[in-house]
Image 1 (cartoon, helix red, strand yellow):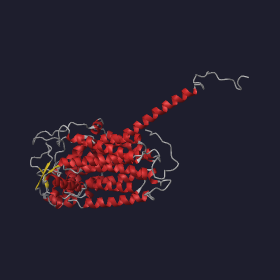
Image 2 (cartoon, helix red, strand yellow):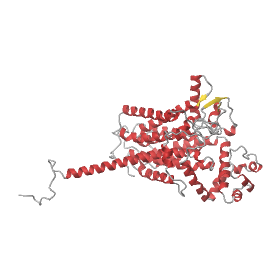
Image 3 (cartoon, one colour):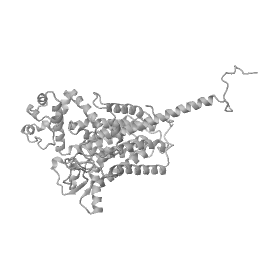
Image 4 (cartoon, rainbow, N blue to C red):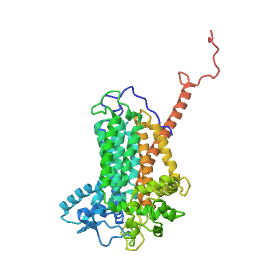
Length: 525
């Protein structure tokens, strides 16, 4: 796919903007329209024809319990419940969970109590806040993109379609923290575009803040740091200084990026280390007993190689969240340092890379099914069938067209195309091509890393854990479709211009067709 090239400017304008950028007033008006439309579309998905959300699977305790709230007693996976009641007590410190989404909830809960005077909380209020934050992220992307209005709105429109997929927006009306990852990634994309176009400190600081917010939403989302770093370091436009100094410009773009991302990565690592061990230990239990031993031809031999008693093979197939999970088994307690250590599994996969590669296709295929069908979107009866909302789902419709079960998953070819196109476009100095290259690289790297890191919990709820890979892939598809449309339109214009040139070459000064026979040299005397 070849994006159309614009004329290469000799130097950047003194104010750092391209000459065809509309006035500040026009850009502000356009951003306001994007904010209003995005927010309205997301709210329509959530509240038109009945309220939808996502049923609580027990994960909401990591978010709401620290505020003294808990889901109502009638909640179940088979029915969505949005009312949270006061009086809930949190689990012990072993289950504490820090997330960047909690301060947003705290502020929203405070405002809700101030207005209503009720200590309870309707999660729909937080959903409205989330919809506005998504709208602001789309508006920021509109402002960051280079060129005139006509060069901005197609990509922004496709991005809005992707982020408003019902498979993603249902998380806004829930007690989960995944929605913070969605919102944060959209802001990362917007700030990344602004950094490539303008190469100024305000955009870089906004980018780092968005990266920190995204990575702190859930521990697994920390892969956003290397994804952003790699995408920008491969951008020739970002690495080079502007031809003329601009106000607030980056004098050493590469050093500034590496230092700030390093600080953000360090803070995220410290946050991850401070999380309670309960959830992490559950992930390791599921990786061992729910996945590795189930897939093994000789579970007892694998356990011995890991330094564990072979008798533990009797727990193969169990998961960490069953009512009778053998946490208190003396064999597990005596070998806790081995069972609940990532070093055990990293060493095993290093010695048997083929065993890890056997898991990868399952994780990649799960991305296409990340809209889980065992958590309801609508109110329902306990022990009933979970009901999914039948509302527009363009991203999962496209992902559903990809075949699954191949030795090399079909979605891998989408990511490969995004990486190849991203590397090619990122090398351009022209702003329009450069930003699309950076977006393609960022989203591809993030999607692949999220699909792989989902295996840290083994096969347990694998589709649910790959939802962030699906969200990034949806944004990647928006970038690729917009780029393909631009390339097709440019090719059509070139063909039309070529026909016009031929017609003009065959017409005389008075517009009549010339004789096809050439006049002899020298002409008539």
